[in-house]
Length: 107
Length: 121
Image (cartoon, rainbow over all chains, first blue to last red; front, side, top):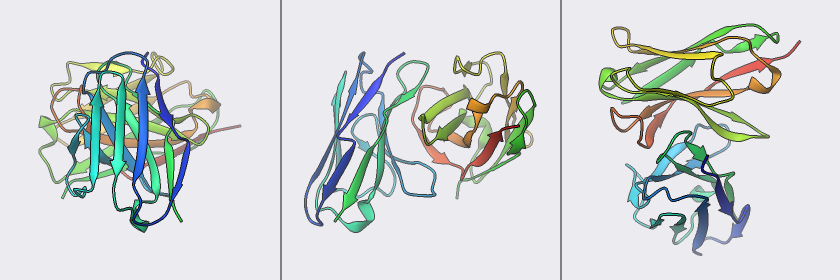
């Protein structure tokens, strides 16, 4: 099973700053990596797929990068609406696995 | 607009059975793989099971293999999860999710709001 590890666990930033979230896999998942955004009381929402492609409705200030075992989600010009938990997930091999999440707080 | 509406959750005693359903609308259901994913505060998000558009490819998490059965009824646009021999550690919110593709190896771009399953005596 591919284990996904995210860092940091919590990130607290001010509006207008840049957030950088990391995700590491124990085995190569190529570019079969998705990021999901989840807000309290809501289902996960697909944010990034194919490691770098923004899902429908995701703003251009969001960037995904990486391949193999190292991935990054960058959110520029933070806004209050970005406050959420972000999960990475690999779909390269079964079982599909998630990271434990990074909680992004906007001060 | 894609809509996924789960039902069938509830409180059940250990060893009991439940059947979850997911009513899909707003897209051509038969063309897409579908999955069940569960979430608990302690274990986070876990992929439970997935089924391809054709129904020929099915995967289960090891923790549910032999106890859970995923199925789809394309005539009714419905995804189901039959859960038997339920255990307390099966307690979770269960989400129905739609893949971007007919094949299972893809991101999932639509999710239902979830249904809560509580296994307790």
